Length: 197
Image 1: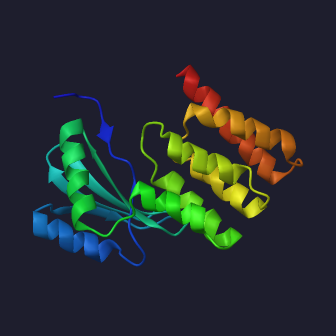
Image 2: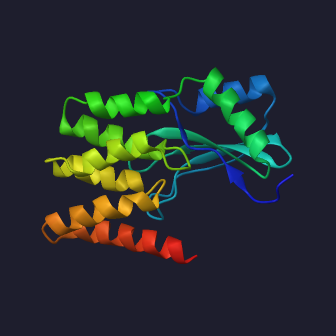
């Protein structure tokens, strides 16, 4: 068994499906509730509930503060157990698949719809680089809408793949100086620091 921490991608819950549905599911499969903590908006900490899958693996429910979207994540020390548990979650709860998250970005009708969809896509991205997800977020970074660009920038913060450096630099070079460019610059610095560790 691998002693390193393993985690799943963030699995995005559909619509109004929330904590109570996850609680009912967890009770049905025999995963007892371990803890819960309320959101602390000032400290930028989301509401979180945790269930025990086994002695080394937990299911985490969180309510994202940026998008007001609920998601689940499995964390443990055995990638096989994590993979199996997240598969059960995806099969038994109503969640967005990666294909559906991409489709939501591509079919969004307004800038607000697309910005939220791209944010959710970033949140639900695979842990490892996916060309389809990357291209979809890259296209949003090139949007004429600042709202969509902002959604794309925030979406990258969830799984900040090094490939995002080039489109982020291009966005930085083409945007007027301000709070938005400071956010882009900060994200680029985070990506560069990630390479140093």
